[in-house]
Picture (tube, rainbow, N blue to C red):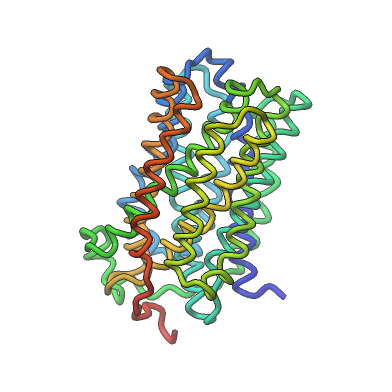
Amino acid sequence: MFTPQRLVLLTFFLQPVAFGSWLPRIPEVQAGLQLGPAALAVALLGLPCGTLATLPFAGGIVARIGARAAILWGFMFYSAVVALPALALDPLLLFLALVLAGSAISFVELGLNVMADQVERAGGRLVMNTAHGCWSLGIMAGSLIGSMFAAVGLAPWIAILLVAGLVLPVALVAGRVLPVLDAPAEAQGEGKRGWSPPGWALIGICCFVFGITMTEGAMADWSAIFLRDALAAESGMVGLGYSVFAMMVAAGRFGGDAMKRRLGAVGTARLCGALAVTGAVLLYLAPSIPLALAGFAVIGIGVSVGFPLAVTAAASVGERPASANLAVLSFVALTGFLIGPPLIGFVAELGGIRLGIACLVPVLLVSVALTGRLAARPKTSSVPGV
């Protein structure tokens, strides 16, 4: 039976599959455009730039059209542009193609997170960590598919477009069956307060999630290049780092709701944060591909529950609508993606990719120090009848 919870899990799984198939092809695009690490880092800024430019408006739009409509329209826009980066003929076009992809992703992901929060509160069952676990499975599946297509020599743009074309019809069918749980925008006060300044509670949560998402962005953009440059992995192997990372992120998220019930949000975040730091150190020191994959795995477990825990905590802050809080959280979280790739790229240009990866350790330590900001607080529901 397609319950709201199962439909949310399915849409979370489907959303990143096409984009995941792009990640193992980044080294090919880099080689084709003859980009150094710093130049690639600048080009990769397009994705978070597009998302960051869109998010200040996305919260109000999602509140007005509803989470389900945002998911449906976002999926269509996203599927239309996701293959464009693989067609780029120069660094500027790569940047602009990623800007479009990032803009599309912002609507889909904000709609998904708002929908998951509404379904969780309406059904009285924890689902947020599991939903993000399905997202991780989706990007892992996409990464493995991308690696397979790379191994057989299929052109990146053809492979990504093929994956997007297969995913879109299923996503649209699932999206149309999702429930409509949004309160009217006027009732939420969204039209007046869609992007009002966040309070200190929300700022603390955002600072916590910054290091988590910076690490996730670093794994997405630099894992394949780390294996190639630091350990001389072949083209069919370079995608394994991110696949292992994503698999362990998924495993951590699938166990995250049970862990949260046992340890609480703060205890869960502290345990996982310590693992993330340990994994980053292990990756920096890894002398071989198997040990590097072990480092990717430990980092994956470590960062797995950070963003889902932050989403739940942010949605419960104050009297603002959840979509407004989550837009702010997403803005800051994606700033982590914005800063992470170029920071690692510039450091790698000067001192090698290992030193670039080592930059993750101090920001993860800051996130561990801020885990107390995730403590539960009461939330007045903005969904009628919940």
